[in-house]
Structure formats: C-alpha cells, structure tokens
Length: 541
Image 1 (cartoon, rainbow, N blue to C red):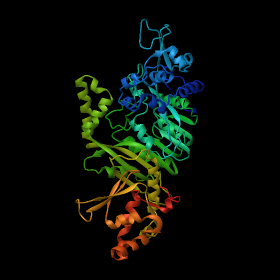
Image 2 (spheres, rainbow, N blue to C red):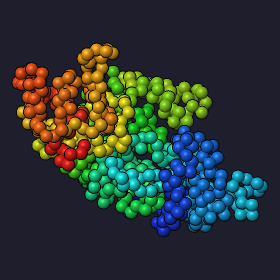
Image 3 (cartoon, one colour):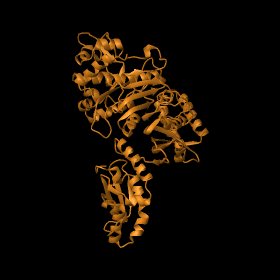
Image 4 (cartoon, rainbow, N blue to C red):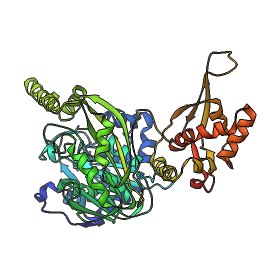
C-alpha cells in the first residue's frame, strides 16, 4: 500500500502506527481466535449481536465472561473494556509491541478494578475500535475476513458513543461501519476492475470491498486522520493495493479515469461545516451536485459511479427535475432512487442529535435549531430526500437514459447485481423499436408470482398483479392478456408469436394485440419482470 498524502497533522494524532508486520501478527491472532464477523455472531448470538447496533453492550458483556481468546478480543477491541495484560497475551496479542505502536494503553490500578490481573500485572485498553467485518463480494460466494479500524466509540456497537475520544477534535473523528456504508457496499456493482476510486473513504470500508475485485484502489479524503485509519484498516485486513491521497472531491485525481467510483460523501445539508465526516461545507446540496457533475469525465467507457446523497426538495421544483439537471451533460446513463424524505424539522433534529447538541444548554440547542431552519427557509427548502445515485458512462453515440424514481420499499440485498442488470436492460431497450421488441425472445424472471385481486367467489379477477421476490421487489398490474403473455415467456418463441397464439385463443385480432403490446413489454423489461434472451444466454436471470 502506498501513501501520497499531503502534509499531515502532528504524529500524536496518527496513532496507532501503520506497521505491516505487526498488523500481520494481529491478524493472525484474530484469525486463530475466530475474532471474525461470523465468529462474533456465533459467540454472542443474533440478539446480543443486534444490540451492538443500538450501542447496547450489556448483552455482549454477559456473553463474554468466560475468558476465552475470542471473548477477550471482543471485550478489548469491540466493547472497549479493559482486560488484563495476561489475558491479552494469552489471546495472542503482542502486547509490548502494541503498547509501543499505540494500539493499546496500559494502566496499573491502585486497587481492584475491572480486568485487573490477580498478580497485579496491570490492565490494557484499546486505543481504537476494531470491528470484524465480513468482506463479501456481492452476488458471489466469495467472502473474506477483514477488520475496520475507527476512532473509539465511532463504529456500530461503540461503547462510549461518538465524541468520546479524548484529545481529538470531534470534527476530525473517523467513523467506522454504519448503515450508510453498508447500504453503499450492498448496492455497488462488483466486476473485475483495473482501477477503483473510493472518494471520501473515511475508515476505508468501500476501499476494503473494492480491493477484493480491483487491481488498484485509490482512496481519498480531506481528513488526514481518515486516510491514516484507511491505511490501518487495509494493513490489518492484509490488503496491499490501496493508495491514499488527500484532497476534496476529484482534486487528488484531476486527469485520471476509473472503472468504478464509489462515494459515501459528507452529504448532510447543514448551515455550516462543523464535522468533516458528515458536513460537505458547501451551500445546500452543492457537494453532491458537484460530485455527480464531475463524475463522468473520470469514468472509463462503461464505468460506474455510485454514491449516496441527500438532495433538497425546493418549493415549486420537482425533485426529479433537480436531480436530472445534475446529470445532464455528464454523458452518463443514470438511475436515481429516492429511499426516504424528511421534512426540515425532522432533518434538523436528526443531525442536531448526531452532533450532540441535545446534550448542551437548551438555549444553545434552540439557537442552532433556528440556524438550520433559517438556512432552509432562505433556500425555499421544504424537505430533504435521501437515496442512491448510480451513473454509468453511456455507450458512445447513444443518448443517455436518465431515470429518477421514488422507492421506499424493501429491496433484495445485496442489490449490486440487479443494478448492473438494470443498465444492461436499458442498453437492450435503447436499441429496440416496436418491431424489434416483438421479434425478441424473453423469459419470465425468477421468483415472479401472480396475484389475482377481486371479490371472493367472483368468476374473474378485477385485476392481476405480477410481483417480484427478487431485485427491487416491484409489483405491477397487468390485464389477463398481459399475465398470459408473461407466463408463456420461456425463451422459445418470439414475443410476436406468443401474442398471435393468445389472439387466437381469446378471439381478438392479432394486429390489435401487436399494436398495444410493445409499451407493456418495454415496461416489463425495464422493471425486470422479463429477461431478454439476448441478456440471458445461459438461461439464468
């Protein structure tokens, strides 16, 4: 792993030291004790493990009092509890080296204390969160063990709560794995890649995933401490292909192109840039707009850019038009999915709590709340949307396809394979006129079921619904002809031939069905109910 970071903060803030040899010894100890994502789940059980996501550690503490190596490591690095030096050494931790390099600190309590050794050997505490992480490749059975390093109290399950790190300004804190980073990892398209850019890397979660399927990963961030933690994460996880660079947006890679750009940016729309990990420091949703507008020129042909974003719902403006405006001119196909909308009050309260303002003086809290509302009112903002944006460099000479939709419903995870298929279907549809759609062969996608809706006992349903149990898990109404057509699609006959057979059965003119079918076929293909044979050569969705 290489580092081309610009000037760094004082060495005291860059601890622990990045030492590949010591990281390898720690990794060996973790692996031997099964201090892994699966190992922790097996030890704690599903309920206690889930409690960690709510920052509740009592169930995990009750499950880790047996003194095994795995229990010791879990208490020390994930629950941030002191353990005896002897127990740490018995778990395989090279304690003296970890003390020297800043992974641990040592205490010798004056009297009995939690974790104190009976022989008075003292106790040790972790200086960072280390979270075992299942570094899976979405859509495959390929999985590997990894470990995410972040500031104390800044990973899911952190015991102290965000902001508990002494001597580090909260604006410089480095967060670990959370809901946003997991969402982005699950929606990312995973293909063998030559070069991947993780823009706004934080503790390196996305870089970790990318290193599993890319020859080179460039991880960037404006926060030097974030780059340091990314290097720790990569070293501890045994990944040597991650390069770190400091800078904002695409500044560190001005003329470079990538097969994949992923970004969990500081997308919070706030009246100031108080916290580097969340606030973009630009007016409104300008940071996300800038990222989208610049992405196209940094993509290889067919390359993807995937990011999470917040966007403003402005009075008198449709949010879809706003997002389409960001994308126009990039040369990219795009799929924007809005997952949630909050009113300005909910949104301000959410991030004021995140900032810890609710624990401060009430007058100060109210003043900050007013500041947020004043900023929204001045910009005519009525709500904030949250979702994901996927861009793909459009084929040369083709007009880009841009779709923005609202979908707050549950989806299959990981969704990356379905997102890749969505873009492939757009390529197919872009090349087909009505005659081409009727000449093509289709297959009903896997796990699509039919529901008939109507009055109990009625001879015929009022309408028929096709429902997916995979991908976006959509549902769409069709008439009986549409349902019959979809059910007959097994890839053996062209669409036109199936329609001719249905017309004969129902006694309608074949030309009438052929005239009205292309619009419905296009919808069923776009939404993934039908798989064109051209995209399904092996007969699997």
